[in-house]
Length: 332
Image: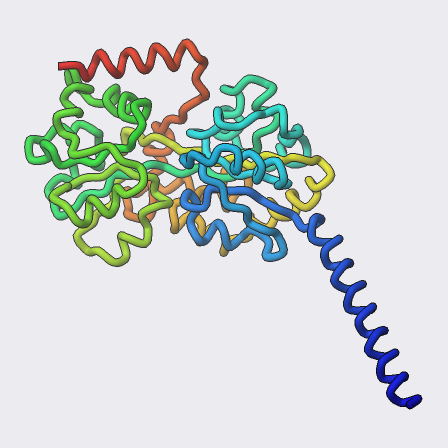
């Protein structure tokens, strides 16, 4: 009888210990660092640098689930976002992040770009990556030499109806301004097969399209599996896509600083650059990735970087003017 009681008591004690362990685990879970990101924008090499004990929360600014996105961001410590979606955020929900010792890591290019934002925004944005757009040419090797020099090759008659453009009037307008031809924007329209951001590479591979203009970080895996594809960065420059991290609480900036410092490891810098992700930091090794004198498939030349351009946030008036100009230029 006694042994049965002891066994029952041990069982109850074990149950109590299990319950305490479960409660303790649950109480610690909210303390786990959470980072919200739009998963499809980031190459594997970058996502792999995020500390394993952080929880990656997926968001999608293209989704109609706006409320869900806001809740995810609100309950995350950090948020990753590219410059195209900056206006989707409520900056009032974030803390100042762009301060010493984080800002001491930034290079001149990123500091100059931050200067294009108003102070209430720039103080809460920390550049963590810059991705150059690239031109992918399928099969038409004879166009590579001219494409290496300027964007004028896009008006080639052999490309009529065979170019896949980004679904961004601002990017297309900026490219049109680089082309040495009158009415270049209307001429580019006649060259377009479609405007797409999600499936441009699938369209390029599986259709009659010959050229696609895409962020470099999204195409490295396709280049490895399809020998028909060639990568080109015109020395005239390319559009740049910037990525930022924002913080909901300064209390965890020490953790963020530790992550930022880890990115400067040479093997990580090499791996990121090989997948089209360039760190905007001022270390000598990071900066060496911007200084190639040769035009290669491994990335933009130094001349291309020097001529490349970024897109500051537009005011409401500028957005209206851009929309009107776009519509007028493309009207028959």
